[in-house]
Amino acid sequence: MGTYRVAQVAAAGEPFAVVERETASPGPRQVRIAVEACGVCHSDVYMVNNVLPGIRFPVVPGHEIAGRIAEVGEGTPDLWRVGDRVAVGWFGGSCGVCHPCRQGDFIVCRDLKVPGWAYDGGYAESVVAPFDALARIPDGLTAEEAAPLGCAGVTTFNGLRTSGARPGDRVAILGIGGLGHLAVRYAVAMGFETIAIARGQDKAGFAQELGAHHYVDSSDPSAVAPALRALGGADVVLATATNSEAISATVDGLAPRGELVVVGIDAVPLAITPGQLIMPAKIVRGHPSGTAQDVEDTMAFSALHGIRSLNETMPLAQADEAYQRMLAGKARFRMVLTT
Ligand SMILES: [Zn+2]
Ligand SMILES: [Zn+2]
Image: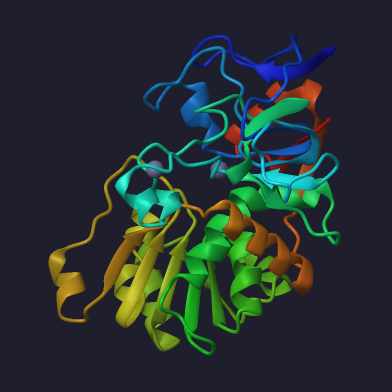
């Protein structure tokens, strides 16, 4: 059947090497996808550095996959056919038998299949994925535009639409990088009074370009809550920044019954006292991406509202360079590998 190239890491923390593999047919209820684009997400670090349980080397990360179905395994519903344009994000399938799955809450499956962790991911010309991981890409989006929506896009879109915020409410987005710049655009399109929070006055203009109604400079974390309160308090803060100090600093800027939705990862504990939460009845919750249907909804909403991830693309052969750029924080937005 020929061969395809993957960018793999042979052992924890090693650089990426591009190698050829034999193409294999998909098993039952799986499809083989000819990958056209794959986003480089900060969470790929957890696979590459062997931080998650059950990682098997060599590792091929990549959970922001966009391409076309090249081959369909037996037992796959007729909904999916060769040539269909599909995306696979962080949600790469679920077990179907655990308690959350049996309740239909697939994103918190106890055996969630994340591409690059449960099976080889999208830093490759070809990926085999279970059909329940597939999201249909709308005509209005290219593969490069669709890819980051499978993680960065759906995480922020879903984090906002599952929050308590209603049109007209005040929503603050902490961080305007790979996730945050999309979050600001989604928040505006969803009808929220949108506050962008980032470090430095130099980002104020960019926040405005994204459509934010207000900008708060978080260079001094202690100034963030007073600034949010001066605007009336945030009904929701979506924290995309990977910095616990910055996340914690927003809590006193929430309105009563306000909700802090955390999607940015940091190993440092959040510094929040019970007293900050109890009397004003504030909520702090984590939010984990979204299912294949959520990815599809995210892509449709993005196409409808002209919302695009700002990407920097590189060919698959330069996967190591792209990954290092992402790690070093040199990529202004999303690195996307193309085949
Ligand atoms: Zn991700
Ligand atoms: Zn499950």
